[in-house]
Length: 451
Image 1 (cartoon, rainbow, N blue to C red):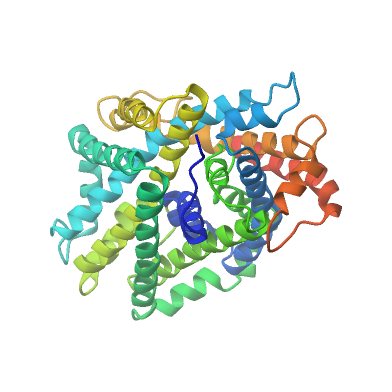
Image 2 (tube, helix red, strand yellow; image 1 turned 180 degrees about the vertical axis):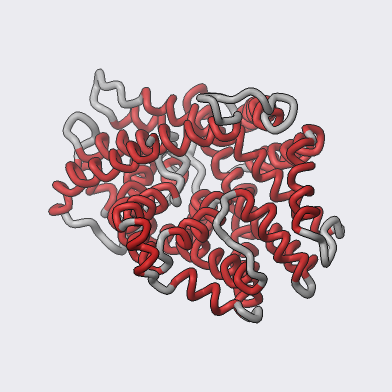
């Protein structure tokens, strides 16, 4: 059977960028930037994105494009006889399932807040306590969270059931185009708020005193971690789209485009959040609370807050759903390639698996709220730790060693695939960097993540 392919390069870029542009990146980048010296952190982030994120992204894409298979079968096709690299494919499958069973819950929160703003649940003049109670009551209601999680799972399944071009590419193109328009509208609105420019200064102007107080090494580690996690690499979520792409352009060129789009959305998110928080004297230094407590407080305090809140959470819904669709497609492709089943059967299996797998994450905030792992983590926090701190960094190490060592695919074979097409090419002299320096940087990310 002929391998599916994207209908256009734009479709590939938007789908791949949609996978990378997740809700964690959107809310994490701004507050981590603010905590770590503003513009100085951004400069280090861009440096590490270039020297770490971009190369590892080409490893995943090259494996997919060379094999035209999902990750498990890709390893089996390319690896040397008797090798066991393909076992990593099963780890990637498990990692994607773990990601999905908590990501669908968080995506459901976004849909819930869009619905609440659009229907007037948030009113002008609500107190901080009242807006905070909205999120608390959502977490305390397993029925409500189950409703939004189910909607997310069904949506992802229906889109993927339509196939690559008619489903994933078509829907992702509409969502990503809308996301980019919404982020520009929201950023302009936020910047024009009285006091908004002060937030931009806090966000992007280098703060040497803050860097000195927290330590340059901490800023560098934070930038390294953000640059690594921003692209969703390590679980083969990107590899599958490499298997669908054409050979018209080199992989460094395509990877650079994805990195630029991902960074644009992250930076623009800060231009929404920091000016708005500055205008209303709110501290933008919290993770989930920033999105579900702090920003709703800002929106109910501004003129037309119901409209702006609705647009913001529509933007966040698109960001979350683009990732849901992308990871769903990876799971579906793995089952199709590994077991020879149809797309429809693979969709149904994943719908049931992800739905029931997501239930503990929901109950971890209410019925099972006393069930804690390692003394402090609920189900969602445990699942996020397993993915972010273990399967992603270790997966990237496996991709690196497979692509640049003789025991795996080999640097020459990787480089030939990587540089096929028009555009930027990696020179052969990068081999020592890829073999020794890049793995060391990834080990640092892994160790600091565990620590």
